[in-house]
Every structure is written in C-alpha cells, then in structure tokens.
View 1: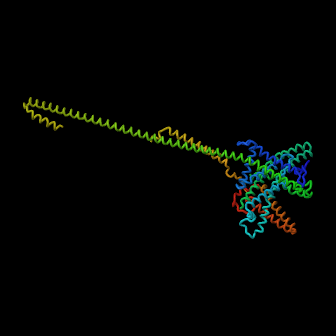
View 2: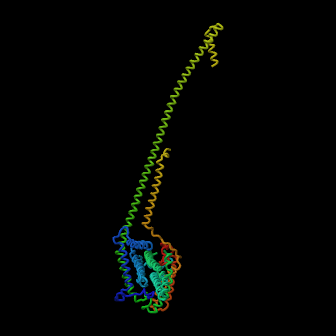
View 3: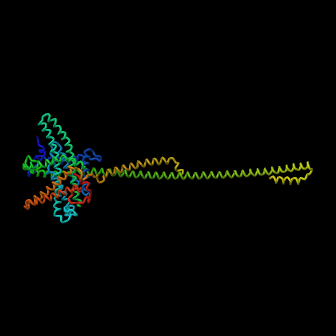
Length: 245
Length: 198
Length: 132
C-alpha cells in the first residue's frame, strides 16, 4: 500500500545529462501542453459561426480569460492576453490532469508553481520597468509617506513585492498537494480498514469511498478555482505594472 | 465567487497545516533524499524548473501563434456578424418607425380633410334651407296680403250693400208711415247712424 | 365636431396602440440583444472584504508566511555575504513581519495585491481585487 505522499514522487523516465532528466513531472507537463493545444485546435477545425460542442469549449476558455484580462488587467493589457491565457491553461490542465488516477500533478510541486510564479513575477517586473523606466521603482515609496520613514518603508515594500511570487506559488502548491494527499488518505482508509477487519472492514470501508467521491468533485472545483486565482493575480500584477499609481 | 472560494478552503486548511508542520521536518531529517516529502527533494528541482520553463514556452508559442489567433478570428467574425445583424435590425426598425409616422400623418391629414368637407357641406345645407324658408315665407306673406285685401274689399262691398238696403228700408218705412220721401235726408241719416255704430 | 363621430378613427387608434406596443417590444429586444453582445465592462462579482473566515485566514497566513520567508532569506543571504552573523536575519525577519502586516493590511482594506500604500478607491475599484 503506497503512502499518501508517494504520488508526488518524481520518477526519471529518460535519463539526460546535467540532471535534466525527462521525468513523470515533465511527461504530464507535456500532456498538459498537448492536451490543451488539442482542445483549442480540435474545436476550431472547420470553425463555424455557430459553434459546435468542442468549439464552444475553446471559445469559452478564450472569452473567459479575455474577459478576465479586460476586467482585471485593463484594456492596455490586451497584448499580454496570450501570456495570461497560457498561464491559465497550463495551471488548469496541470491541476485537472492530476485528477486522473495514477496521474502526476505537477502543480503539487512547489518548485513548479514557484517557477511559474517567478516567471510571472519577472515578466511583470520587466514590463513595469519597460513601461515606466526607473520611475517604476517609485512603487516602493508610497506617495504621502514621510521621507524620514523611507529607510523602513522601502525595504518592507520590497519584501512585500518579493513575497508576491512566494505567496502565489505557495497557495497553488498547498491547495493541490493538500487535496491530493487528502484523497489518497481517504482512499487508504478504505483499503486498510478492509485489510484490518476483513469483511466487516470492507463494509465500513465504503464510507471513506463515499467521502472520496465527494472529494473528487470538490477537487475538480479546487483545480479550476486555483487556476482561476493564479491567473487573476497575474492579471492584477500586470495592471499594477501598467498603471503605476 | 469569493464566498465559494473561501468555503472551499476549509478542509484543505487542516491538511495543509499537518502537511506543512509535520512533513518538512521528516523531509529535512532525511536530508532531502528518498523517503522524504518529494516536493522538498532539491535534486529534482533542476529538471522540474528546466522542463517547466521549456514546456511553458512551447505552450505559449503554440497558443499565441496558432490556437488563439484562430479562436479570436472566429469570435471576431461572429461578433462582426452579430453587430451587423443588430445594426440591420435597428435600421429596419427605424424604417418601420418612419413608415408608421408617415402613415399617421396621412391618416391625420385625411381626417382633417374629411372634417373640413363635412363642415362645408353642413354650411351649404343650412344656407340652402334658410334660403328656401325665406322664399316660402315671402310667398306665404304675399298670399296672405292678397287674401286680406280680398277680404277687406268684400267687407267694404258688404258694408255698401248693407247701407243701401238700410237706406231703402228706411226710405220705404218713412214713405209708408209718414209719407216723406226725401231720399237725400234718409241717406245722410243712415250714414250718420252707421258712422256712430261703427 | 364631426371628427369624433367617425368610427374608423377609434379602430385606427386601437390598431396604432397595438402597433406601438409591438414596436416598443422589438426595440427592447434589440437593445437587450445589443447589451448581451457588448458586455458592459463585465459583471463585477461582489466580494466583501470581511467575508469568509477560514478562507481569509488561509490567505492571510500565506501572505504573512511568504513575507517572513522572503525577509528571512534576504537576511540570511546578507549575513552570509557580510559575515554579520545574526543581525541581518533579525533585522530582516522584523522587516518581513512588517511586510506581512502590510500584505494583510492591503487584503483587509481591499487594496488588492499592489505594493505601495494607496488610498482606498484612488484608482480603479478595490472590489474586484478581493478574490482569494
């Protein structure tokens, strides 16, 4: 019986030099890329003005993120729509594919979520500097604050700014990991109850299974919501960088 | 949305705390090697960062170059079409409205005209009636006048006759009774008496 | 005057009313369709800052922990670089707490996730930034 943690194990599939092995994590990332691209393209094959079922899905995703960018990042953010969309679809597919039994959830790894968050963070910071030049750094000294307090406020604001990718990645990783651990724990309950108590145990073991069914549905919601939250924060950061206050 | 979002974190919170508090210690105790929390095994970080970035860039290129423009095109086309349809509907409606206004104007005009015609006819009719009444009245008055004249004449004639008879009677009576036959005197006497009576 | 006596007029008025009502209906439908087609700058989801106990707690926890982690890491790095053993860690741990408090302050006041103390409502609308 595998422990609840074993599902997060990284297994190299193809050994590569420099420690850059192609692992199960990379495999599921590849599947996310291929899967999302397939969903977006399948719908659009022979695209019609009146959408078919698959086409509706890709259009729905497109409009959902386009609306999010428009509402939360502002009209000036339209050029960055593909970036935001890629972030969303990558996280969403990472979360959702992890719901398949025996699948690997790469978003449950802090280093992956941190890489994504750091990428967003660097992108947004560069965007702000590109748009506003050195004036971008006025971000760290809020207007109206007394200059005498600058030596305290500036480091605090810098730390606050730097904590963005950390909180962003922790939130996603923690939710995904917690959810999957919990499902595994409840599934493990059924098995161990069965093993320990025999027939009676199997009967009682039904209970955790029922709970698990509910959890799976719940996890799908969390998978979507976390992708949504990750993306909406990306949008808000982009807006901050574009509309320096 | 927020409400739901928050409610959904409840069970996670507890598990997360357990995970964050208990597992890292275990992982660190085993030096990040096999057996600890796989997320904290730093040996896997290089490959995960590398593949994460590479595959994200691939995804970004696929999305921004191929998939999204295609979806955007379709959506744009539909949007254009819907906007066009709506505009056409709006335009047709405006045309309808103009027609309705035109029709109403025509109706009002026709109504006013009808009113005028009717009142004109009424005037004519009443004028003709008055005229005719006048004529009839005049004719009647003339007839009454001649009739009155005739009556007066007849009366005068009748009075003359009465006078003559009275003179004859008086003369005869005088002649028979008294033997006076002065016709002149009798006539004047009768005239006097009749004048008194009248 | 005679105008009032004409019967077709009454019928005409009735027909007109019917026509007008269907006309207004059409107008309303066209407008509704237009509104649906061109969404008015999105439906703002209402999110009150004070709502959601544990969800909010989790969020605040993450924000504080993140700020503390960043602060402490900077302190550690500086200490290792300058050899000033515990001092920078202590200083930046405190700074990290400050940053954590700032993060929480911004969340609670609905100022979104932006760095910088900005006055409530000075820009945009804080309402949409209160998401988890």
